[in-house]
Image 1 (cartoon, rainbow, N blue to C red):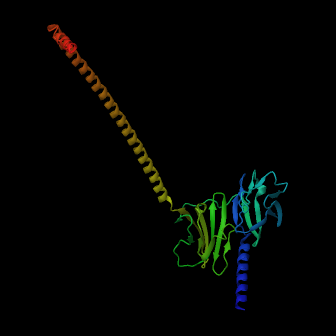
Image 2 (image 1 turned 90 degrees about the horizontal axis):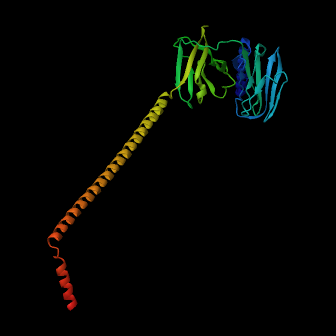
Length: 332
């Protein structure tokens, strides 16, 4: 019985949350600024088996078919859109609608829906507008620092004695505003289509974003309502803390490059010194060889001169003994 009461109360809270949002206007997951070439992003928010994807435009409380995609490749585009739109097919869960030559007639509400198993039909509503609050003020921007893969907590950044009753968090980009989550006291959270599996309310004034990626860095806007009726908006910028490692990597690259250049210069100097030393040794050997040759020639000339002088003084000095010896040998 208690379990049944709990389920009924949870259903009523969810119903009241959606009713209160609808009272403010149509619930939208993203607001996109009209441009001649614009892209309406639609990614299936859950891991599921997808059988079909449909793009529609809401006009006068009716839905006008734009394109239907039966996976994997069967794409049908209505004739009045065929020359102006393209549906991406990079992955089965990303079917972004891309316009070319969009005009004021393309302003309005667009609905993309995935037919999945086991989650059923998953929908995203996109509002294309001519102008909107896509710019942000440089005043009172609060900063959050994190790195990819971490979980980061966004919370109401001001000190106040008055409690926050409800906060709405959005991701703001130059041409698009995405609803992230709406956290309210005693009500069920309202999730943006692109974030429902990555965020959760911690309290009515804070939420956690899971598994941060590089695409999450940027500007976030929050709108708050306090219990005393006060309301307002503020900005938080999410940045990476990888600047220091980046500088460290750059330092390593520069130091490594410098060391490599120094090594190359040292090798060149050593090689040049080796070549110069080798050349000097070769020149020295040539000089020593020439000196040796000159000295040998000089000694030979001296020896030849002395011999010729001795021969002129004793013309028979060497002949008589030789013949004498020969005669003695012959007698024997």
